Amino acid sequence: MIKSKLIVSGLLFAVMSVATAQAQIVTARIPELETNETYMSLMRNDARLRIKTDSLMSVVRQLRGELNRNAEERDSLAQLRSDSIAVILNDTEAAIYAMRSQKIKLIDQINTIEQEHVLSSLGNIGEAQSAASSGSIYANAYFQKSIDTEDFKALMSSHGKEATANKHAQAYVKNYTRIKELYDKYVQAQTESDAENIYTELSAVVDENMVLERQLTKLWNEIYDQKSYVYSYFLEKEGREDILEITENMMSEAQQEKLQSIDNCISESLADYRLQKPIVLNYEVYVAKLLNLTSAIDSLSNASRAVRQIDYRLPKIDIERRSFVDYQAIEFSQRSPYNTSNPIPDCIVYEYGTIYRILLGTFKYKQAVSIFRNASPLCVEKLEDGRFSYYAGGFHSRAEAEKAVEVLKKKGFRNPQVVEWCDGYKTNISEAGESVSFRLVISGAALDDTAREIIAEMAPDCELSRLSENNFIIGMFASRAMADRVAQAVCKCDPALVINIEEIRPEEDEEEE
Image (cartoon, rainbow, N blue to C red; front, top):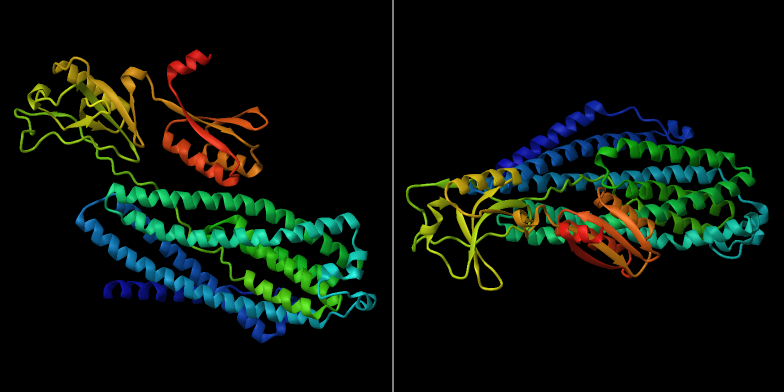
C-alpha cells in the first residue's frame, strides 16, 4: 500500500512538471479582457490543469491495459498484481476527479467574468421594456413579435425537449460511473461464473449508454440548430453584431476544445451537449438582458453553471471480453490417467468463447475408461435423455479439431466427430456440415433511426431486411449470444418491439430456397 502511494505521488509530481513546462500561451476569448490580469490568470491555470488531467488520463489507460493483460493469468501471483494495480488506479482516478472539481470552479469564474463584461456593455431595447409580460423571454411580447410564427413554434417545441436531453446526458454520465466500477471488478474476477455474472450487467449498461448516446445526438442537434438560428436571427434584426461575434467565437472555441479532447472524450454526443448548451444559455442571457428580464438572467446563469458540472473528459474504458477457455491437445499414454479415484470429469460449458472437442461416442450408461484407449484429456456430458456423451481434447480452431479426428481414426476410434461450443451453445459440426446461424425476427413497431444505427454498429456484417411496415429480419449471426445482445439493445430503443431469435440450420436454408 505504501509503495503504491509513492508511485502515485511520483506520477503526480511528473504530471505537475510536464504541465508547468508545457503550459500553453492562452488568449482571451473576449479581446477586451486581455488586460484583465485576474481573467488571464484563470485562463492560464485552466490550460495547465487540462495538461495535468490529460497526462493522468494517459496513466489510467496504461494501468487499465495492465489490468486487462493480467486478467488472462489466473494464478495467485496475477491476483496480487491486479490488487496492486487496482490500488494505484483508484488513487490516480481520485486525483483526476480532484482536478476536475478545480477545473469546474475555474470555468465558472472565467464564465462569470466574461458574462459580466458582456452584460455591462448591453443596454435594453426600449420598446421591449414596455412589452415585457413575464420573467421568460418566450412569454415576452416583443420577442414573440420579432420572430416568424412558424419559427417561434419550432423554438418552443425544441425548448420543451431540453429536459429530456439533459436527462439523457445525466443518465449517460451516471452509467459511465457504473461501467467503470463493474469493469474493474470484471477484470479481477477469478472464475468464469463470477466474470460472466458481472459481464451480463456490464454489457447491459454499455448497451444502454449506446442507445442514450444516439438519442442525445438526435435530440440535441435539433434543439441546438433551432435555438441558434432563432437567437441569431433576433440579434441580427436588433443590429447586435457585437453579441453575434462573441457567440460565434464561443462556438469556434467549443469546437476547438472538443478536437483537443478527442483522445479523452467518452462520448462525442455528450461533448457536444456539454460544450454547446452553455452557448445556448449565454444566447438566452444576452437576449434576456436586451429585453430587461433580470430574473431570467439569474435563472439562466444558474442553469449554465449546472450544465458545466457534466464532465465529458473522462478516461475511456476499452472493454475486452474475457475468455476462460482452456485448450488441450489430445495425448495418449501407456496408462489412462482416469480411474475410480480420478474419474472422467464433467464437460465444462464455457459461457463465452469457442472450443472444439471430439465426440468419441454417446452411450446409454457410463463407460469404463478402458474403452478410450488411454486418450486424455477426456470429459463426459450427461444429456437430457439420460445418455452420456464422451469427448476428448479441446481445440482453438475447427482445423485443429479435424486433424485430431484423423489421429483418433488411426488409433481405432470408429466415428469421432467435431463438436463446437460457441458462447455455451453446442453444434455437432460433423453432422451439420457447418455451424448453425441465428437471426432476429422483429415485429410490433417500425424501426426508428436510433434502432437502425444501433444495429449497424453492433452487427455490421448482418443484413437488415424489411418484410412489411412493422416486420423485419436481421441476420445472420454466428452465435446466439451475439444475436441476443443485439436484441436487448434494440429493445431499449422501443419497448413496443417484439424480437425473437430463430436458429437456422443449413438444410433449412435449402428448403427456403
